[in-house]
Image (cartoon, rainbow, N blue to C red; front, side, top):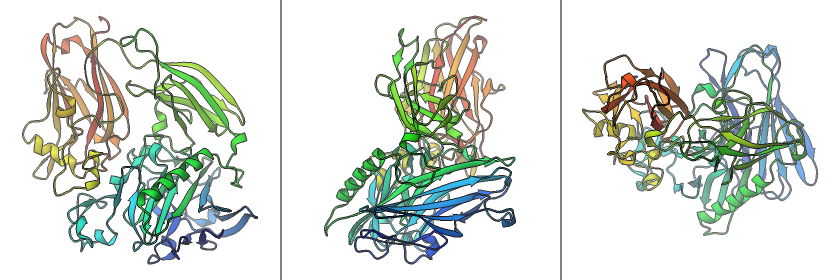
Length: 616
């Protein structure tokens, strides 16, 4: 494909991008790699109970779909047949590539289809990957403040780096450039929330050329706006990830059973290229890429894709409304759901959108008045879900919403009533689904990434190890009214390393009650921002009795290891009997009871203790 600005070379019939010619660079992709390892779509999949296998999608049929003066669209497809056997993912896959006249780039999207009665399987990853020339692209940008000159792939080799706690993380000991010596490199340090992954990529300075992955819509990505995902990382590599279990656990993965039929369109995404004269600064190319991203977002849904499976604007609908919050112990009048996250996803339980991986999702944020408008929704049946920063709990509209082509649904005024039985006696943290407000230690001087010294400090490697250094003998103790959660509450409730044995830890919360209402039911609200193979046991005033409450084993989001400050959100309400409490001094014991690895633990979002709601 060649429009006089960009030339893209694809293998035939495989549909792998083998070359991109632009801005004086004959091939932007890594020429040292084999052609199948430069620009490609791939999936990780397995049969139920299998161990998983990566498959770079190789098509078997090439077809020109559209070719005229304004655009070209080509298809690379492959069909699954029963004779294909168990070694091939049971999907029909159609990869599309589109180039427009005058465009500095190209679009790609894919249609996945599993027909009724086909074999069961699990889909672990679906993504698009681009591996750029290591001799050209050294500067990476993923946001206004997260940009830097990066080490090379060679710097990660065993001769130049020492491995750390897992394979993705290394400490650079003998890098090609001295400035990187002693730094940690780990691709997970460059993850972002889906809502923030709009444009990211790499810059070459000789000549000045930028390569950018632009994702104009999140509708085809799983897990909602707060799911975190990989972006760009050392390679140089840039990704568009549509399905993965990163930061959420395997519950989010699409699992197809009993011959379930399914079809989904991923994309289009836009691969944008820009350039400048000699001496062009990185910020100039970055700002231009952001401007192009805004243009792509405003153009969604695109009018040019030829596939009938991609509905155009007139074939989509919209939903509007206003969300209020009713919290009588804060305000006697309903309050606007300011900045609420409001979205449509497949029908399910409240909060199920977090682990929904098969359908489309459409999200927006309410304005300061709680008003929201969700546009360009694919026709279908959805539940409307919401949550409001500053309040606990999930909202779900009580009935299924049917969106029709060209349809308009006005839901009027909705009221979210967060869980609440009685006034707050005390609270720790802020209910925002994150542990960012809690104490984050300085990194070990051996494991510093300079990008995160003054921002996003939780992204530094090895912070979990600091807990055992801060509390070598006794666990964290927090006194309500005296302690400050910003300084005295460690960001993650992790295990303690005792000479290679990882031990459970017990945190204590000390508080006073001037009186205890006999027969009254108090309430402990426990919002958890992340959990990984953990179990939180709660005891009142006696550390050795059987737990008054336990979460059981929860979580597989691995957010502690992957430098995140949140993962899969969960919420628990605990009825507290008055005979568990004492007049005067009380203690709650929070025990993270699972201990076999350094990465087992939880991050708390918010803890609240409410006064008695009723006598028994």
